[in-house]
Length: 493
Image (spheres, helix red, strand yellow):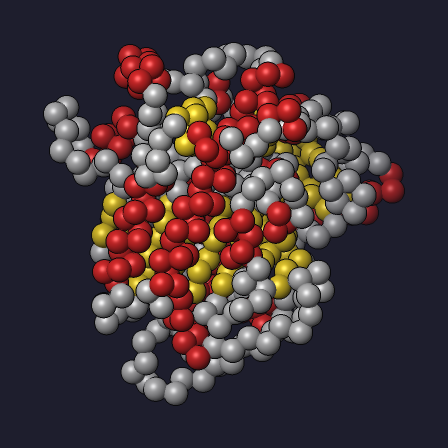
């Protein structure tokens, strides 16, 4: 493997963003003792690629867009399982979900794959200072030994309830700032699905997180060891809580519900999520549709929280530059999965639809002054082997399921993979550039429903064409691929 030194990295981008050109990644180690690059991981929760950098104008996110303009930005990146605990476990272990592994939000790495060398553990074993700030693994106390330091706002504060850090965090993470919402939360263990409070940026959890990350950067500036520093933001996860100024960035009258707020034609009933996450909040009906007014408020809140975190990312990136750590730091921005904002009548995530599975992914290398878009087909298990190659580390003994993205960083015009494998509940998906094919498979490993969406003509997945005669060969090929290459994932342990 050709060795890479990112501290002396030079990128030559020969075309505009709309036409990615070959990028020259230069990598020879001039000094054996030279410090390896740092990693800054900006880990988002529930962020869909509805950003200006991805061709959308609804959400105001200038700082993320600026990072995209200095990164290789992946437009066809997919989460292997669209729920937080399982997705994070999959990405950080480099392993695919199966029938019995990485199942839902409550997934624990130390339970499902206790012996796997995770990405942070590999870096720690290779001399990196590793710091977990905020939500990285879903559970605060999962694989604590992977990190030199684990921190979440409030979690380790003294409390008069005798609660452990994990339980104390769980009792506070909704983090309302308005007195009436705080009292409601304390009394009922629930609260509204959104909040606009006239408070400063560091009043909410993600603001406290940002302050901690900036303190860490100042501290790590004088550290002789390279670092893996994470910023695990809660927003835009429910509840959609953000300072009022971010709500005020949007004109409510201009916020629209999605045009395809209907079940896709011929869609299997099983494909439409009845995920109960949002229904646990005050003011949301336990069943049935929300009102149009509530739907607009929810979408408004989602937009506001994204703009809030965008401002916080701007603060972190400014600190990185002011401390001159940007000269030797790889920045990765990624979301654990997408999010449904009433498309196909669905809210939240954990569905086999593209609104759940597609994610933003950006990789910035230190010498990148201009970025490039890549349409390469990739998935989140590719992050682990990419970091391994960029840092010139020895690949762990266990098999990584993903592929390094370094070739795409060199030449963003590459096509990437022929397909990726996704799993959500009983839905097993083969995603290609052209199609999304899903089979719903029961506990006896029998397929009871299926769907095929043709992204060449139906990128929003409004018509299931799995039974159309002219797609018969495609269905046969994709089904065969699913049941041969991924048979062990379907059967499980």
